[in-house]
Structure formats: C-alpha cells, structure tokens
Image 1: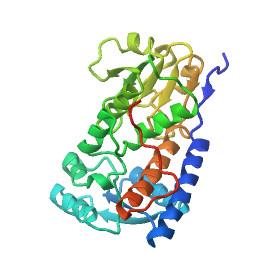
Image 2: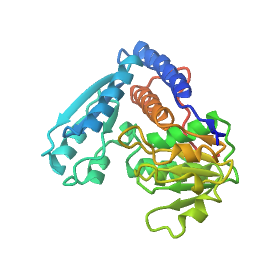
Image 3: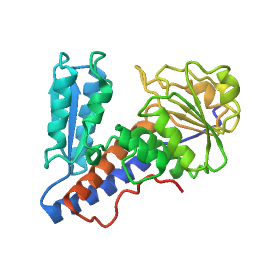
Image 4: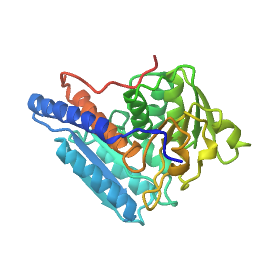
Length: 295
C-alpha cells in the first residue's frame, strides 16, 4: 500500500524564519554596533551533543549571529556549571544562552537551567518561560514546541476544537507543547509510560505528537486515519519515534525524520536569540519574531 500522507517539510519554512532572523540581526548590528550573540554550553563530549552544538553554531554564523562556545569537562559538577551559566547571564555581550542537554546524571539539570537569566532563555527551558507559555504571556517558547506550533501554522492546521495527544511529558518538550496547543483551543491529552491503553487515545486523536525518545514507538495502528502526526523524536540512524512507513499510510499529514521538526527547532532558537538581543540592546528591528501567545 503506497503512502497517502502529505509530508510536513520543515526545511523550507525554517529557511524563511532564519532568513528573516538574519535581516533582523543585521538591523540590530547597524543600530547598536553589536551583533546578537548566543552562548552555547556543553558538558562532556557526547558525540550527538557535539554535533548538535556544532550545527547550531554554524547556523548562527550564516544568520549573522555571533556564537560563544563554552566546553566543560564531563566531570563538571552542578555548582561549577551553575557558576558558568550565571557568569554568562551577567555578561552584557551575551544575549542568549543554550545549555545543551541532557547533561550528566550527576548534575542537577533543573538548577543549571534556572541559572539562565529569563531574558536570555532563548531555548525556553526555565520555569519562568514555562509560566509564560502556560499563561499566554510574552516570553521565549521552548524551541522544539515553538517550532512544532509554527510548523502546524505553516501547514494551516486548524487546532481549535481538535484532540491532540502528546506522547511524552518532558519539561522542555511534552509539557510546554501541550500548553501551546491548549492556548490555541485544542483539547490536549498528555500520555506517558503509565498511560493505560495508549492505543485507544492516539487512535482517537486528530493530532498525535511523538516525543518519547524511543525509536518507532508509535506504529500505523496507533494513528487515526487522516490524523496529523508530528514526530519530535530523533534516535540513532535518523530514526524517529514514529514508524514512518506504517504511519504514513494512515496519516493525513506527517513530519519526516530528519527534515521535519529539527530544522524548525533551530530556526526558532536563532529567531529568539535575535529578539533577545534587540530587547536587551533597546533596538527596534522592523519586524520581531511573533511570540507564541494565546488567542
């Protein structure tokens, strides 16, 4: 049986967002003499994390955003990491901070996240950013949820009244995404490892988001015919959390891995970095990146 789902390509809309961010970054530089600057912090040398950070820094360069990389040894403890991030938070030449996660199990990741100044939390990982997303206030969205919502908007997916099943409840993906969808009048069900009869929930959902970090966790049989399927997972071998072949035979719209959610995540990070710089430097680019607020 051939694929019936329409692909939700994230590369093209992400490119447009980055192009717009580059224009705004140039304006910030012209008006203030400073280019927006994103500081990346990496603990250890996990190959995947090293690759992600390198990719994000390369995208920054193309968009006219300076990057400052802080590489810390794997033995770094919570106190040292918090001190490093606090110093970046107080550095006026740094406008956004990205702590590449996950960090080692010996580190209190939440304490590290909370050391990021809210105005520099361009990755949307602090409790203050989560509150802003939950209450529809101005603030920086968690980048992957923010990218997903903008991808849905790009493909004119009407969320009002729709049932969205978010499979995964992490503090920087599942939980904030549910809040953003709820703000757009979707009815949201959070699913997780303790959910009883997951199949009955996802089969009745109009939108299914897979964010569990387990390869091919959701199969075609989990999907309602014609549903929108967002695969926010990335596992070794370019494998998502959704079994693409079987799901694409039932879904109406589906994201590929790679090329779906990933590009939108990076684009959101860069766009929010430029806006953070503009706010901190008192600059007014012609057009800011629209905040994800409730309707």
